[in-house]
Length: 472
Image (cartoon, rainbow, N blue to C red; front, side, top):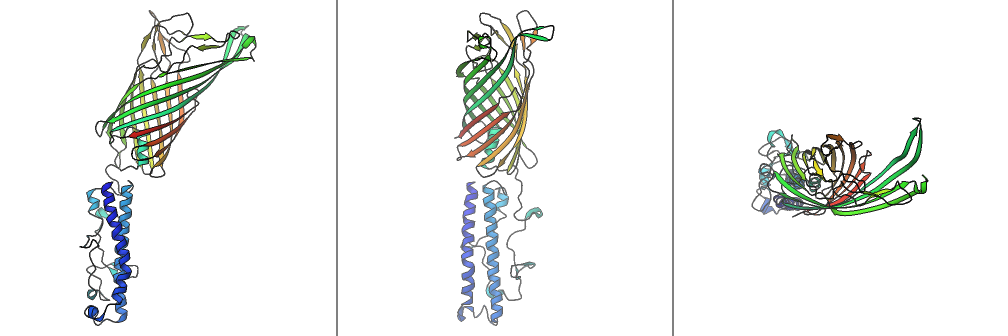
């Protein structure tokens, strides 16, 4: 970018100097004393002299327009939207300057006779006077100003923010610290039946409506480091705070009477490690393709073995956990593949991943107080995919929309000396639509906000978050 800036400044100065010189040149030529113009304009009438001076002015105006076009193209290159900044383009821009920094001076007035057209003909100015083009012809028949694809397109800062958030770390960066905070909200209602069916048709007992409202606030720090221009790795350490409110009817034996209980817990969540490898770099016909491998450790509080206790003595249906989990309790490995293609100012992206949950033995998986049940548990492996698009509507701002879906089959348990048993109701299908907004503060700091809205009962109602990646 610095090379482009150093090229744009001299061209802009040259353009201004030519603009200032165009009119005075004509005036000076009109007012030449007889001693200076005697040889140059000998034998020419006033009408011929005016025609000659118009050629001079038209030629200077043509050079001014040419330099203005070059300045515009270089500014677009600096923003990553025009021609690439390679040496080939540098060699096919401005005409060679003279000793004073301006383009090569025009021929003497004596050579610009009313009938002359210069060394070559065929081009004409706005006044209809033939002129000579000093710019070289574009290669391969391409028109001047036509946007050409570089081998690897130059993205704007806003597009880089989308790449870093939706696709993969920026491999040309070194150390990035990405701090974020999010709030995940769940609201679940469940009909609880306590009784039996008489004559296979009449239910005798209590019918209560239970509801659980939960907020999970997670603050995490993700440290990313690019080893090479294709390999990067990261470490993510989350802190999770959960607050849940449990509401159940049936207080005092009346189904319409409600009682509730609340619980909160805060601790480190599951720490994860990831490595990214860029399989393909984006070019004119190929997208950017990145493969990733992540390992998550069960450093958070496991949900197994947490006991449910009766909170309200007047409502036996109201039970609440003694503490809330902050992790899954399992090691898992996720292999993923993400694809991204830039069509400035639109960025398209998509991803596919598979998560394998390792089976683990627990000393107690029962939630009943006073009961211990050791078992081996295997969570279902997760398949997740998604895709979306982002629009960079300025140099520093972009918005995105995407869709994600994850499918997890039933979990299984194995008691000592027994076979594997599926856990009823443990299969989940979670789908969500996501909206994002990115703002580049400066070359180091970016602010990224997001809102995710759940589309299925297994997905959170909504997730609101903001991240602050800072690159050194």
